[in-house]
Image (cartoon, rainbow, N blue to C red; front, side):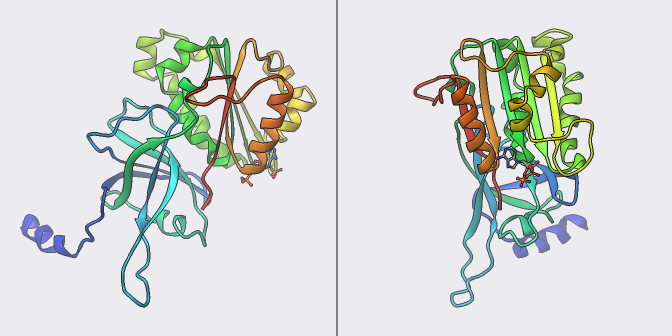
Length: 280
Ligand code: A2P
């Protein structure tokens, strides 16, 4: 029977430490994919946090021993979800993502159940408007925060900027934002029409799209504020979270400081927080 066959197969399967099972994989472009895995029953996290995930590395040629190959991944799913979602780049020669991009439902990954991170509501002082600034896979923590009722309870307005090279790289974020309109929990807890609080500002830098340019340049020229119909950032009203590549994080951090915003932390909440998006 099938049961005996799978039992006979079982010993061949590698027993991973902290194993979780892949339940779904979606390939968005040749460079990007998202996947869902089972959630350890004991895992609690705050929207915006990350965990270490990975696979077993290749055996050491001398000893034959294998070590886990782990990287920090923002949890893209909300804290109430029974599964965990991740959004990843595929780097063809990346130690982890060259392998991770081939996972299929039923496969196992390693997930260390110790969530940490700075992109959390606790690290910000109360405000009127929150800005989520992302490039590439830096959208992931915001996919979590955007499905958290607290985001809509705490702020009157949520501005999401996402800068990518190509238009296809915006799709995961665009689909997530569209799906919020039909999110049962948010509609129930926040009320119908809550999504009107969202201002979504996707831009591309290397392929034609309705809005071209780096968000940093679009803010400097004033075009972003004009397009969005909101005033430039002000420490009295605006809060921000940044998650993208290193150069982006540094440049935007400097700009926010020029607007008078100060960096916060869990232990010392202020006006903005930063985290680097994972790159293999
Ligand atoms: P650009 O194409 O002009 O480099 P990457 O895929 O390399 O991580 O980049 C993701 C997006 O972030 C790209 O659109 C890239 O624009 C943009 N980007 C890179 N560096 C900066 C920066 N310092 N400020 C704003 N955007 C940046």
